[in-house]
Image (cartoon, rainbow, N blue to C red):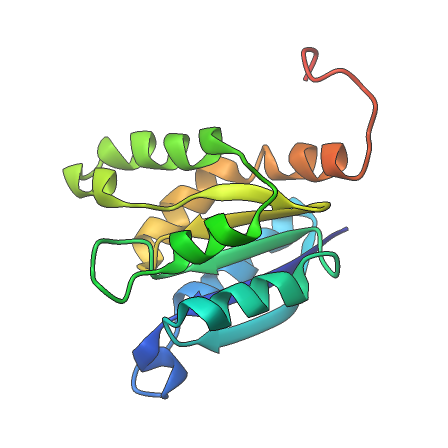
Length: 161
């Protein structure tokens, strides 16, 4: 079972002015992949708070999924916070989400989402909209278990997978 923390990054959501539909969608999508959401929080678009939460959950869970704050707006700072926390980047994850998203809307290339590793925890930034979450996470569901196994020290070769 993969342990997960979901962080919804939304000023309005954190103030109760908007219902978070992306966070619960992530939880629903992870169940068939053998994952369990152990932590779920809605926090404002505050870089230091995002960093604090990423650090708090790193090591406690196998996977942290953020939703929101990946665009070009001045308050969109999720990727910036993530880059300051991770030990190494996993660029292919964000690249495939943008590439596949571009097939549906050209606006997908405006996403600044990143993915990386902190210790033995995989961190992935997802967009904020439920539609983009469904598409982006849907692309990744097959590779997340393998990535988590590798982070936990699985010695088998990747080439045969």
